Image 1: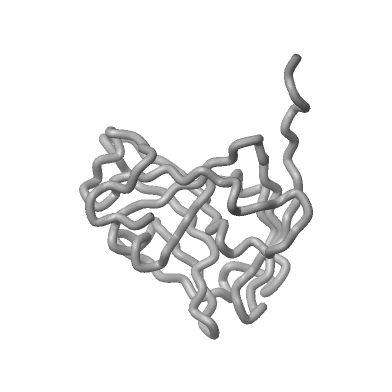
Image 2 (image 1 turned 180 degrees about the vertical axis):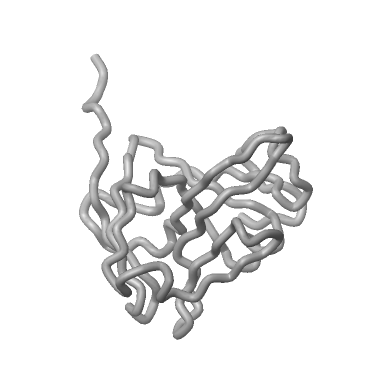
Length: 151
């Protein structure tokens, strides 16, 4: 006999000072997974991400992404949004080319989800690690950090 079917649920979050607030609808399984990358930007930000469908993210304040500071690196197609008051990185979105294909992404920093929140326990997330520092995405995610990564 199997357990209940996981369902998407809305959760709130934001930056530390409250300038950025959002609602994200997340599918939480019995063992949710988030990723950490060892590239210089993710490592220095402490970004711990989950991929979302952009329609599952609703910005509550400010009114639009155009009102949030946007750090772009490598190309103008990758946007890392952060609070210009408290410095907290909230979300990244955009596209990048890898092995001849364009990949679109929308990633939420789970560390910006409000805690405590009924039904959400960040300690339950299993962290998987990717080797972005070496563009070694083909190797996939693994259970321990890649060299120069962080737990």
